[in-house]
Length: 415
Ligand code: 7TS
Image 1 (cartoon, rainbow, N blue to C red):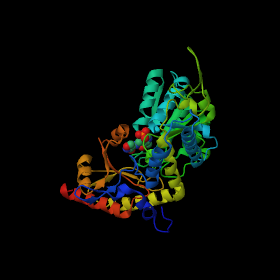
Image 2 (tube, helix red, strand yellow):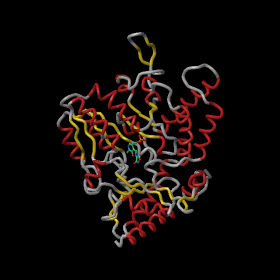
Image 3 (cartoon, rainbow, N blue to C red):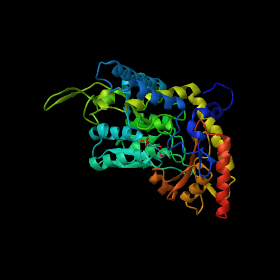
Image 4 (cartoon, helix red, strand yellow):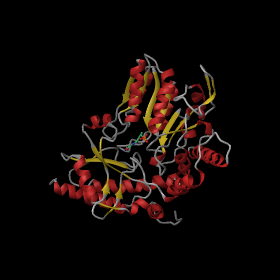
């Protein structure tokens, strides 16, 4: 990345080889599907090549040189994540496959021992399936109840419903997204956390769409569990993080049994390893965890406030232009104070897949579908939406390309 005073996209764009791609009859690629996964800078791509070329080894076992280097690099990423999230104890950082695995770990290893018949687990109408289905399975298995916080017409949580649920005195856990992957709504997580703490309920935050896009300070938030994925923040696929309070992790049963998570194994009993290894059974995704470091370095160099400001600028620009496209319905807050760089929309009576196919012919990659948020789709009374999502390398010209393509859709369908 060059250090200039120009806008963020021009500073960093040349670091992303894939953004030079031409697709569909030689059209410049306009990648607006960043909520699904982001592209990777050359620094991350080089880190993974370097690992396999020069250091590849399993970790935490052998004493040879490569094993030592790999173990050090793996643990250095843990330290980097600790610092990036502003937590104090690196033993509270558990490497998992992604947000989905992090939430399932909590549902299994904490949920099975702490949620019983008569208890309540609360989630919201705008969750990704990975923050709904594990709680359905848990509550169905234990006989506990699952309750929802509904959203209002602006796509914001009706937090008075959280008060009502908490007032029953039965809520054991509240599981909520920091930022909605469909509407882009930013949850007032501080408010939610305060309410939960006052009521003695544990709070899990799904930060898959937050950590990549804004400064997240876990010490300041003071929640109980926080989950996110590396691949949505310039890092590789197959790596995620669960942060949880040490006191909770220490009391929790292991999630999976196997190598590395044990201290001693005998024929009929096992003692478990210390944190964080108790929750990292088997050979972890060594290479990808190690190269996740390069992604964190990249974002740290930019500064997370600059990432957020760039997305605010793009989202304001896009919302203003999209509001003028005939027949377009935009969901969510439409207010960048309360919205990340994600915009969901539909043309009345046009199937989102048709919209996405037409814009794709111009090289514009958006997502269409239910975005793993069918509960939200039911609420919006649609089967699917289109979604454009931005990141550090997104330019205003790319948003113009999207708008031109959407105008073409309006013309094709005579809207
Ligand atoms: N939570 C949220 C808020 C998400 O956006 C996603 C992925 C997940 C959890 C699951 O993350 P994973 O890395 O374990 O898969 N969201 C999306 C999306 O919006 N389009 O594709 C994946």
